[in-house]
Length: 409
Image (cartoon, rainbow, N blue to C red; front, side, top):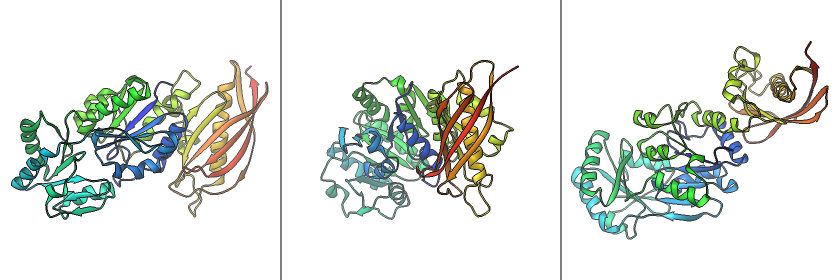
Protein backbone atom coordinates (compact mmCIF):
# COMPACT_ATOMS: atom_id res chain seq x y z
CA UNK A 1 0.00 0.00 0.00
CA UNK A 2 1.54 3.30 -1.08
CA UNK A 3 -0.35 5.63 1.29
CA UNK A 4 -0.87 4.96 5.00
CA UNK A 5 -2.12 8.28 6.41
CA UNK A 6 -4.95 10.47 5.11
CA UNK A 7 -5.08 13.97 6.63
CA UNK A 8 -8.20 16.06 6.08
CA UNK A 9 -9.05 19.65 6.81
CA UNK A 10 -12.69 19.92 7.92
CA UNK A 11 -14.50 23.08 6.82
CA UNK A 12 -14.52 23.38 3.04
CA UNK A 13 -12.91 19.95 2.68
CA UNK A 14 -14.47 17.11 4.66
CA UNK A 15 -17.83 18.84 5.08
CA UNK A 16 -19.98 20.40 2.37
CA UNK A 17 -21.46 23.91 2.49
CA UNK A 18 -24.18 22.59 4.82
CA UNK A 19 -21.35 21.58 7.23
CA UNK A 20 -22.27 17.91 6.78
CA UNK A 21 -20.34 14.80 5.77
CA UNK A 22 -22.21 13.26 2.84
CA UNK A 23 -23.09 9.56 2.79
CA UNK A 24 -20.73 8.90 -0.11
CA UNK A 25 -17.78 10.59 1.61
CA UNK A 26 -18.50 8.87 4.92
CA UNK A 27 -18.74 5.47 3.25
CA UNK A 28 -15.43 6.02 1.43
CA UNK A 29 -13.66 7.10 4.63
CA UNK A 30 -14.95 4.12 6.63
CA UNK A 31 -13.89 1.77 3.85
CA UNK A 32 -10.45 3.38 3.59
CA UNK A 33 -9.95 2.85 7.33
CA UNK A 34 -11.09 -0.76 7.00
CA UNK A 35 -8.33 -1.16 4.40
CA UNK A 36 -5.77 0.02 6.96
CA UNK A 37 -5.52 3.75 6.20
CA UNK A 38 -5.23 5.90 9.33
CA UNK A 39 -7.40 9.02 9.23
CA UNK A 40 -6.43 12.37 10.72
CA UNK A 41 -8.79 15.36 11.08
CA UNK A 42 -6.65 18.52 11.03
CA UNK A 43 -8.43 21.79 11.69
CA UNK A 44 -8.23 25.18 13.31
CA UNK A 45 -11.25 24.08 15.34
CA UNK A 46 -10.81 23.31 19.04
CA UNK A 47 -10.76 19.64 19.97
CA UNK A 48 -14.32 19.90 21.28
CA UNK A 49 -15.53 20.98 17.82
CA UNK A 50 -13.82 18.05 16.06
CA UNK A 51 -14.80 15.19 18.37
CA UNK A 52 -18.36 14.69 16.99
CA UNK A 53 -16.98 14.25 13.48
CA UNK A 54 -14.28 11.89 14.76
CA UNK A 55 -16.99 9.82 16.42
CA UNK A 56 -19.11 9.83 13.26
CA UNK A 57 -16.14 8.50 11.28
CA UNK A 58 -15.19 5.94 13.98
CA UNK A 59 -11.64 7.22 14.46
CA UNK A 60 -11.32 5.68 17.92
CA UNK A 61 -12.17 2.26 16.49
CA UNK A 62 -9.64 2.53 13.64
CA UNK A 63 -6.84 4.33 15.50
CA UNK A 64 -7.21 7.80 13.98
CA UNK A 65 -6.05 11.18 15.27
CA UNK A 66 -7.27 14.73 15.81
CA UNK A 67 -4.98 17.68 15.03
CA UNK A 68 -6.85 20.60 16.60
CA UNK A 69 -6.01 24.30 16.99
CA UNK A 70 -4.22 24.27 13.60
CA UNK A 71 -1.82 21.64 14.88
CA UNK A 72 -1.35 22.99 18.39
CA UNK A 73 -2.76 19.80 19.87
CA UNK A 74 -2.60 16.15 18.76
CA UNK A 75 -5.12 13.71 20.25
CA UNK A 76 -4.95 9.93 19.85
CA UNK A 77 -8.61 8.98 19.44
CA UNK A 78 -8.29 5.37 20.65
CA UNK A 79 -7.13 6.52 24.10
CA UNK A 80 -8.36 10.14 24.06
CA UNK A 81 -4.85 11.11 25.17
CA UNK A 82 -3.03 14.28 24.11
CA UNK A 83 0.31 13.22 22.59
CA UNK A 84 1.64 16.71 21.71
CA UNK A 85 0.50 20.19 22.76
CA UNK A 86 1.55 23.86 22.53
CA UNK A 87 -0.02 26.83 24.35
CA UNK A 88 0.27 30.60 24.22
CA UNK A 89 2.07 32.52 26.94
CA UNK A 90 -0.54 34.32 29.07
CA UNK A 91 1.63 37.45 29.10
CA UNK A 92 0.70 38.26 25.50
CA UNK A 93 -3.04 38.25 26.11
CA UNK A 94 -3.23 41.91 27.32
CA UNK A 95 -1.75 42.97 23.97
CA UNK A 96 -4.50 41.06 22.14
CA UNK A 97 -7.15 42.64 24.34
CA UNK A 98 -5.81 46.15 23.76
CA UNK A 99 -5.73 45.72 19.97
CA UNK A 100 -9.22 44.19 19.84
CA UNK A 101 -10.75 47.08 21.78
CA UNK A 102 -8.82 49.80 19.94
CA UNK A 103 -9.65 48.47 16.47
CA UNK A 104 -13.11 47.11 17.28
CA UNK A 105 -12.53 43.40 16.62
CA UNK A 106 -14.06 40.49 18.50
CA UNK A 107 -11.55 38.50 20.56
CA UNK A 108 -12.22 34.93 21.67
CA UNK A 109 -10.41 31.98 23.19
CA UNK A 110 -11.44 28.52 24.36
CA UNK A 111 -11.55 26.37 27.43
CA UNK A 112 -12.32 22.63 27.32
CA UNK A 113 -15.97 23.05 26.38
CA UNK A 114 -16.84 26.67 25.56
CA UNK A 115 -15.92 29.81 23.65
CA UNK A 116 -14.84 32.67 25.94
CA UNK A 117 -15.54 36.26 24.86
CA UNK A 118 -16.85 39.63 25.95
CA UNK A 119 -18.89 39.95 22.71
CA UNK A 120 -21.13 36.86 22.41
CA UNK A 121 -23.57 38.49 19.98
CA UNK A 122 -20.92 39.34 17.38
CA UNK A 123 -21.85 37.71 14.04
CA UNK A 124 -18.44 36.08 13.67
CA UNK A 125 -18.49 34.75 17.22
CA UNK A 126 -21.86 33.19 16.44
CA UNK A 127 -20.42 31.69 13.25
CA UNK A 128 -17.58 30.09 15.24
CA UNK A 129 -20.10 28.73 17.76
CA UNK A 130 -22.18 27.23 14.94
CA UNK A 131 -19.17 25.61 13.26
CA UNK A 132 -18.04 23.93 16.47
CA UNK A 133 -21.48 23.25 18.00
CA UNK A 134 -19.94 24.92 21.04
CA UNK A 135 -21.61 27.16 23.66
CA UNK A 136 -20.45 30.76 24.08
CA UNK A 137 -19.51 31.88 27.59
CA UNK A 138 -19.88 35.63 28.03
CA UNK A 139 -17.41 37.23 30.42
CA UNK A 140 -17.19 40.78 31.71
CA UNK A 141 -13.40 40.84 31.60
CA UNK A 142 -11.59 38.63 29.08
CA UNK A 143 -8.21 38.84 30.85
CA UNK A 144 -9.63 37.88 34.24
CA UNK A 145 -11.44 34.91 32.69
CA UNK A 146 -8.25 33.71 31.00
CA UNK A 147 -6.54 32.37 34.12
CA UNK A 148 -4.78 29.70 32.05
CA UNK A 149 -2.55 29.51 28.97
CA UNK A 150 -4.83 28.99 25.96
CA UNK A 151 -4.15 26.87 22.90
CA UNK A 152 -5.01 29.85 20.70
CA UNK A 153 -6.97 33.08 20.39
CA UNK A 154 -9.00 34.37 17.47
CA UNK A 155 -9.52 37.93 16.27
CA UNK A 156 -12.70 38.22 14.22
CA UNK A 157 -14.04 40.89 11.94
CA UNK A 158 -14.67 42.26 8.47
CA UNK A 159 -12.22 40.54 6.04
CA UNK A 160 -10.66 43.64 4.46
CA UNK A 161 -9.88 45.25 7.81
CA UNK A 162 -8.72 41.92 9.23
CA UNK A 163 -6.26 41.46 6.35
CA UNK A 164 -4.62 44.76 7.30
CA UNK A 165 -4.52 43.70 10.95
CA UNK A 166 -2.86 40.42 9.96
CA UNK A 167 0.05 42.33 8.40
CA UNK A 168 0.36 44.66 11.39
CA UNK A 169 0.36 41.84 13.94
CA UNK A 170 2.77 39.74 11.91
CA UNK A 171 5.20 42.67 11.79
CA UNK A 172 4.84 43.35 15.53
CA UNK A 173 4.52 39.85 17.00
CA UNK A 174 5.86 37.58 14.26
CA UNK A 175 8.83 36.53 16.38
CA UNK A 176 6.62 35.60 19.35
CA UNK A 177 3.49 33.96 17.91
CA UNK A 178 2.06 32.59 14.68
CA UNK A 179 -0.37 34.94 12.90
CA UNK A 180 -2.48 33.84 9.91
CA UNK A 181 -6.07 33.68 8.72
CA UNK A 182 -7.93 30.37 8.54
CA UNK A 183 -10.93 32.16 7.01
CA UNK A 184 -11.13 35.70 5.61
CA UNK A 185 -12.87 36.75 8.84
CA UNK A 186 -10.84 34.64 11.35
CA UNK A 187 -7.32 35.67 12.36
CA UNK A 188 -5.52 32.85 14.19
CA UNK A 189 -3.14 33.80 17.02
CA UNK A 190 -1.24 30.65 17.93
CA UNK A 191 2.01 29.56 19.61
CA UNK A 192 5.10 30.23 17.52
CA UNK A 193 5.95 27.55 14.94
CA UNK A 194 2.50 26.02 15.17
CA UNK A 195 1.04 24.85 11.90
CA UNK A 196 -0.48 21.70 10.48
CA UNK A 197 2.71 20.55 8.77
CA UNK A 198 4.84 20.74 11.92
CA UNK A 199 2.36 18.75 14.00
CA UNK A 200 1.87 16.31 11.13
CA UNK A 201 5.63 15.76 10.98
CA UNK A 202 5.62 14.84 14.69
CA UNK A 203 2.78 12.38 14.13
CA UNK A 204 4.52 10.84 11.11
CA UNK A 205 7.61 10.23 13.24
CA UNK A 206 5.50 8.75 16.05
CA UNK A 207 3.90 6.34 13.57
CA UNK A 208 7.29 5.49 12.01
CA UNK A 209 6.16 6.21 8.47
CA UNK A 210 7.45 8.71 5.90
CA UNK A 211 5.84 11.84 4.55
CA UNK A 212 5.72 10.15 1.13
CA UNK A 213 3.09 7.82 2.62
CA UNK A 214 0.84 10.78 3.55
CA UNK A 215 -2.05 12.37 1.66
CA UNK A 216 -3.05 15.82 2.93
CA UNK A 217 -6.19 17.56 1.69
CA UNK A 218 -7.40 21.12 2.28
CA UNK A 219 -8.85 24.31 0.88
CA UNK A 220 -7.55 27.21 2.99
CA UNK A 221 -4.36 29.16 3.56
CA UNK A 222 -3.77 27.33 6.84
CA UNK A 223 -3.68 24.07 4.85
CA UNK A 224 -0.81 25.17 2.61
CA UNK A 225 1.95 23.86 4.86
CA UNK A 226 0.58 20.32 5.13
CA UNK A 227 -0.30 20.17 1.42
CA UNK A 228 3.31 21.08 0.59
CA UNK A 229 4.61 18.63 3.24
CA UNK A 230 2.70 15.51 2.21
CA UNK A 231 3.78 13.01 -0.39
CA UNK A 232 0.50 13.77 -2.14
CA UNK A 233 -0.81 17.27 -1.48
CA UNK A 234 -4.40 17.76 -2.61
CA UNK A 235 -6.49 20.91 -2.93
CA UNK A 236 -10.26 21.03 -3.21
CA UNK A 237 -11.74 22.61 -6.35
CA UNK A 238 -13.24 25.25 -4.02
CA UNK A 239 -9.82 26.06 -2.53
CA UNK A 240 -8.13 29.45 -2.67
CA UNK A 241 -6.09 29.82 -5.88
CA UNK A 242 -2.67 29.85 -4.12
CA UNK A 243 -3.63 26.57 -2.42
CA UNK A 244 -4.52 24.95 -5.74
CA UNK A 245 -1.30 26.24 -7.26
CA UNK A 246 0.87 24.41 -4.72
CA UNK A 247 -1.07 21.12 -4.77
CA UNK A 248 -0.04 17.95 -6.58
CA UNK A 249 -3.67 17.28 -7.47
CA UNK A 250 -6.94 19.23 -7.42
CA UNK A 251 -9.96 17.08 -6.61
CA UNK A 252 -13.64 17.95 -6.94
CA UNK A 253 -15.25 20.52 -4.64
CA UNK A 254 -16.60 19.84 -1.16
CA UNK A 255 -20.13 19.92 -2.61
CA UNK A 256 -19.17 17.28 -5.20
CA UNK A 257 -17.75 14.67 -2.80
CA UNK A 258 -14.19 15.70 -3.61
CA UNK A 259 -12.78 13.69 -0.70
CA UNK A 260 -14.58 10.51 -1.83
CA UNK A 261 -13.37 11.08 -5.40
CA UNK A 262 -9.80 11.40 -4.15
CA UNK A 263 -10.05 8.20 -2.09
CA UNK A 264 -11.44 6.27 -5.03
CA UNK A 265 -8.66 7.54 -7.28
CA UNK A 266 -5.60 7.22 -5.05
CA UNK A 267 -6.44 4.76 -2.26
CA UNK A 268 -8.93 2.23 -3.58
CA UNK A 269 -6.98 1.95 -6.83
CA UNK A 270 -3.97 0.71 -4.84
CA UNK A 271 -5.92 -2.48 -4.19
CA UNK A 272 -6.65 -3.12 -7.84
CA UNK A 273 -5.27 -6.22 -9.53
CA UNK A 274 -4.79 -4.58 -12.93
CA UNK A 275 -2.18 -2.40 -14.59
CA UNK A 276 -4.81 0.27 -15.15
CA UNK A 277 -6.43 2.66 -12.67
CA UNK A 278 -9.95 2.70 -11.32
CA UNK A 279 -10.49 6.00 -13.10
CA UNK A 280 -9.83 4.34 -16.45
CA UNK A 281 -12.07 1.42 -15.59
CA UNK A 282 -14.90 3.74 -14.61
CA UNK A 283 -14.32 5.81 -17.76
CA UNK A 284 -14.95 2.64 -19.75
CA UNK A 285 -18.44 2.45 -18.24
CA UNK A 286 -19.54 5.56 -20.13
CA UNK A 287 -22.53 5.06 -22.44
CA UNK A 288 -23.38 1.75 -20.74
CA UNK A 289 -26.21 0.68 -18.46
CA UNK A 290 -23.77 0.76 -15.51
CA UNK A 291 -22.93 4.41 -16.17
CA UNK A 292 -26.61 5.25 -16.62
CA UNK A 293 -27.31 3.85 -13.15
CA UNK A 294 -24.41 5.80 -11.61
CA UNK A 295 -22.23 2.77 -10.77
CA UNK A 296 -18.56 3.21 -9.93
CA UNK A 297 -15.95 0.58 -9.10
CA UNK A 298 -14.06 1.29 -5.87
CA UNK A 299 -12.11 -1.94 -5.27
CA UNK A 300 -10.86 -4.48 -7.81
CA UNK A 301 -8.72 -7.35 -6.56
CA UNK A 302 -8.34 -10.87 -7.89
CA UNK A 303 -11.05 -12.39 -5.66
CA UNK A 304 -12.77 -9.24 -4.42
CA UNK A 305 -14.58 -6.46 -6.29
CA UNK A 306 -16.66 -3.56 -4.96
CA UNK A 307 -18.74 -0.86 -6.60
CA UNK A 308 -21.05 1.89 -5.39
CA UNK A 309 -24.42 3.02 -6.76
CA UNK A 310 -26.58 5.96 -5.65
CA UNK A 311 -30.21 5.51 -4.72
CA UNK A 312 -31.73 8.25 -6.84
CA UNK A 313 -34.27 8.80 -9.62
CA UNK A 314 -32.39 6.31 -11.82
CA UNK A 315 -32.36 3.43 -9.35
CA UNK A 316 -35.32 3.96 -7.02
CA UNK A 317 -38.90 2.79 -7.18
CA UNK A 318 -41.64 5.46 -7.50
CA UNK A 319 -42.08 5.54 -3.72
CA UNK A 320 -38.42 6.27 -3.01
CA UNK A 321 -36.69 2.97 -2.14
CA UNK A 322 -34.00 1.08 -4.04
CA UNK A 323 -35.32 -0.92 -7.00
CA UNK A 324 -34.61 -4.65 -6.79
CA UNK A 325 -33.77 -4.76 -10.50
CA UNK A 326 -31.09 -2.09 -10.07
CA UNK A 327 -29.68 -4.08 -7.15
CA UNK A 328 -29.41 -7.23 -9.29
CA UNK A 329 -27.83 -5.24 -12.12
CA UNK A 330 -25.20 -3.91 -9.69
CA UNK A 331 -24.46 -7.43 -8.41
CA UNK A 332 -24.18 -8.87 -11.93
CA UNK A 333 -21.85 -6.01 -12.91
CA UNK A 334 -19.34 -6.49 -10.08
CA UNK A 335 -19.35 -10.28 -10.42
CA UNK A 336 -18.92 -10.07 -14.19
CA UNK A 337 -16.03 -7.68 -13.83
CA UNK A 338 -14.48 -9.90 -11.15
CA UNK A 339 -14.62 -12.92 -13.45
CA UNK A 340 -12.96 -10.89 -16.19
CA UNK A 341 -10.09 -10.23 -13.79
CA UNK A 342 -9.72 -13.99 -13.23
CA UNK A 343 -9.87 -14.96 -16.91
CA UNK A 344 -6.81 -16.14 -18.78
CA UNK A 345 -5.83 -14.81 -22.17
CA UNK A 346 -8.22 -16.09 -24.83
CA UNK A 347 -11.19 -16.46 -22.44
CA UNK A 348 -14.33 -14.38 -21.99
CA UNK A 349 -17.22 -14.24 -19.52
CA UNK A 350 -20.92 -14.91 -20.03
CA UNK A 351 -23.40 -14.36 -17.21
CA UNK A 352 -25.52 -17.46 -16.62
CA UNK A 353 -27.57 -17.04 -13.47
CA UNK A 354 -28.42 -14.39 -10.87
CA UNK A 355 -30.50 -15.10 -7.77
CA UNK A 356 -30.86 -13.15 -4.60
CA UNK A 357 -32.68 -12.39 -1.36
CA UNK A 358 -33.75 -8.81 -0.65
CA UNK A 359 -33.48 -8.44 3.12
CA UNK A 360 -34.09 -4.74 3.74
CA UNK A 361 -34.34 -1.49 1.81
CA UNK A 362 -32.30 1.63 1.09
CA UNK A 363 -33.96 4.98 0.65
CA UNK A 364 -33.38 7.76 -1.87
CA UNK A 365 -30.29 9.81 -1.00
CA UNK A 366 -28.29 6.80 0.23
CA UNK A 367 -25.38 5.19 -1.63
CA UNK A 368 -25.18 1.39 -1.63
CA UNK A 369 -22.03 -0.70 -2.01
CA UNK A 370 -21.86 -4.11 -3.68
CA UNK A 371 -19.16 -6.32 -2.13
CA UNK A 372 -18.41 -9.30 -4.38
CA UNK A 373 -16.25 -12.26 -3.30
CA UNK A 374 -15.61 -15.33 -5.40
CA UNK A 375 -16.63 -18.60 -3.69
CA UNK A 376 -15.91 -20.99 -6.58
CA UNK A 377 -13.24 -20.70 -9.29
CA UNK A 378 -13.61 -23.58 -11.71
CA UNK A 379 -12.11 -23.85 -15.17
CA UNK A 380 -15.48 -23.19 -16.79
CA UNK A 381 -17.54 -21.60 -14.00
CA UNK A 382 -17.17 -18.85 -11.41
CA UNK A 383 -19.65 -18.34 -8.57
CA UNK A 384 -19.71 -15.04 -6.68
CA UNK A 385 -21.43 -14.02 -3.47
CA UNK A 386 -22.44 -10.36 -3.62
CA UNK A 387 -23.65 -8.50 -0.53
CA UNK A 388 -25.24 -5.12 -1.16
CA UNK A 389 -25.04 -2.84 1.89
CA UNK A 390 -26.16 0.69 2.75
CA UNK A 391 -23.75 3.52 3.60
CA UNK A 392 -24.29 2.62 7.27
CA UNK A 393 -23.34 -1.02 6.65
CA UNK A 394 -26.88 -2.46 6.77
CA UNK A 395 -27.31 -5.55 4.58
CA UNK A 396 -29.81 -4.81 1.78
CA UNK A 397 -29.50 -7.90 -0.42
CA UNK A 398 -27.46 -11.11 -0.63
CA UNK A 399 -27.01 -12.31 -4.21
CA UNK A 400 -25.38 -15.27 -5.97
CA UNK A 401 -24.04 -14.80 -9.50
CA UNK A 402 -22.85 -17.65 -11.74
CA UNK A 403 -20.64 -16.87 -14.73
CA UNK A 404 -19.50 -19.22 -17.51
CA UNK A 405 -15.92 -18.95 -18.78
CA UNK A 406 -15.70 -19.65 -22.51
CA UNK A 407 -12.83 -19.86 -24.98
CA UNK A 408 -12.57 -17.33 -27.78
CA UNK A 409 -12.54 -18.85 -31.24
